[in-house]
Each structure stands twice: as C-alpha cells, then as structure tokens.
Image (spheres, rainbow, N blue to C red):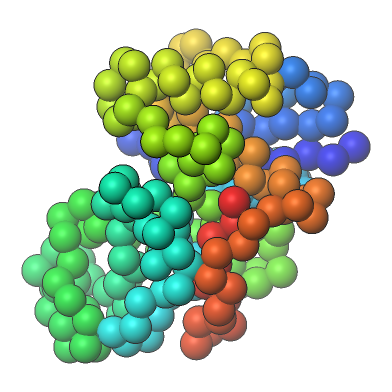
Length: 224
C-alpha cells in the first residue's frame, strides 16, 4: 500500500497529512510533532515545504528562479534561499552578516524565522541522505492544480478557494479539528498540497524545478 505524507511548518512544529491508497477520497490521518516524528511514520515519500539543498555562496538556486517564474505576480511567496552558513546564526543580524560575508544579500526577518526548521530538516537529511523526502512549494502546487492565481491564503476566500481546489482531488477532504500542533487552516491546506506533489513524485509524474546539487550532495529542486 503506497503512503505519502505532506508536511508544513506550524507554530507547534510541523503538521502532516498522511494519505494512502485505501483512502482515495480524504486524508487518512493528521499528525503533528517534530520532523523526525513525522518521518518515523514510514511514508513512501514525504513532501515538505522547506528548502532542501542550500547554496554555499551568492548563487541563486535554479529551483527558486523557476518557481518564481511559474507564479508570476505572486512570486514573492518564493524567497531566495540564503547560503548554508546562515544556519549557524543565533540572531537575524548575525544571519545577515554571515550571508553578506558569503557574497549574498541580507536575511529578512521572515527568512530568519524559518531557519530553525530548515536546519531541523537539513540535519536529518545530512544524517540520512537516502530518506524519501522531497522539497515542495504549496503555492506552486496549487497553481499547477488549478492553473490560475488564488486569493491570498491568509484571507477566508483564499483558504476556501484552496480547499475547494484540493477537493477536486480528495472529495471528502476535511481539515482537522481540533487543530494539531497549533496549526492554522492554511498550514493544513499547504500540507495537503505537499502530499499532492509527493504522490506525483511517487507516481513518476511530478514536474521538477531546478534539479541541481548543493556542495553537501543534497538536491536543490522543487517537486510539483
């Protein structure tokens, strides 16, 4: 039985939507915890909304450039991944200093706030580079699902539009109640979109943006 897991960051850590072939109309189960906890569920493929594969210097990842091209006017939802050295930074100012020393640009507060999750996934993949984990970007997944831009996901109409789009794939989809890991509705929607891309990867039908390798051997690509 094939199982795929879509994972998105949330205030309490990570939220995951697990799907298997016996639950073709809905999410089989919802999970929350550390990334290691979710990886231990044993899915055949895990799609996670976090950068995997980090540049060493000022170069831009081709995956990010191609994802921004897909999204057009909504390209700001794809941030440029900073160099690996910023994972060592305890504060935003330190991250900016380290990034600029590597020849790149300053690190925004929004980027700095996700560095802990980037480091969490990176540490696990450095220890086990063969883990079945692929990087996804939910907004690119939604664009490929529906073919058009959607309202901002922080607004009710944006969340409703994403839910209805996902229900064209999973007709019985319902978000978890109560919320797991303090996940917001948009975190859960993104997790399901990540599972959509993970299933396409498992089936061999996914679109791949980028497909380079970072200096540590990890892939720099976005699976859609």
